[in-house]
Length: 358
Image (cartoon, rainbow, N blue to C red; front, side, top):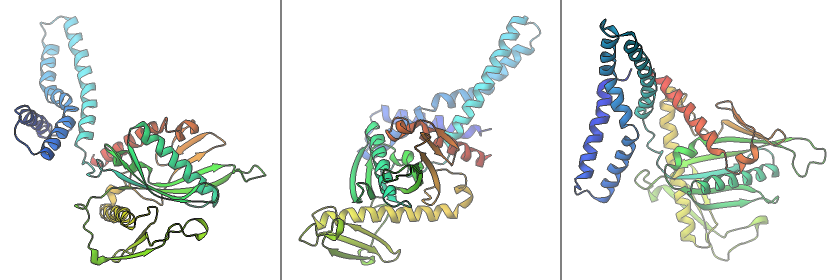
């Protein structure tokens, strides 16, 4: 049972925002955008909130009809059916309201930095990294999100040892955060002559993109080294010292960037990655302090957790966190049904959080 005053506050807040926005009051653009977004979010739940508040009154009225001896059987039967329908609807409304009232992850609206790295499996793992990168490219394209490559390290097999890219759009982190962890592939490599299935892995890290206001980086805590960019085999790519290595001395985090020809651009990209990694480290630290809450979440960001297996011989992809399998591996890698997996993860995450509240 949700306390009535909490639901009343939703209605009161909605009415206040509606009045403020309709009167054309003078807000600065940022505040206006913030209030408009809040109003839009409340609009999705307001009718449910109002119906929930009216339930007790309607229940009382219907019970009066049912218990009134002067009413005929048909009217009593109709009132009983209406009461049953109202009680069923109340259960659904209560769940939706509980989901709405769950504490929001303040990072859900942020853009993200995605890091994909080859794990066990040698060259086959680098080919899998390329497969995952193409999958995320297709998912982002379908959702009209913008991708910007930050750095790519190619392998001899035509795959990638590592890919780092940023994704910009609406509510990026809320969707992509469920991708963090170890992704495993089972298939016959092109180099395998005996037809044996090999298992390889790649690690995916989803970092909420941190702004300067989120993480303050003191220049005095950084060691910046510059050197010449190098390509495969160690050959020099540029004749100038354009590559940048930044070491954050307190944490020991090191970021190297050499994809751009400009030292200034490489430093800016490296700082962007460093800021995101420091922000993630702080976020994980807070999550560990709330360890009981962390157990009731799926999108925890734990990179060591084996989350998903892509089995090519069986044409399936399985998410081990929710024991959910799709027998449409090709469509999944093409980004066509990725949302189905994500929706199941999101719903399971909500259920776990709701159980933790009870």
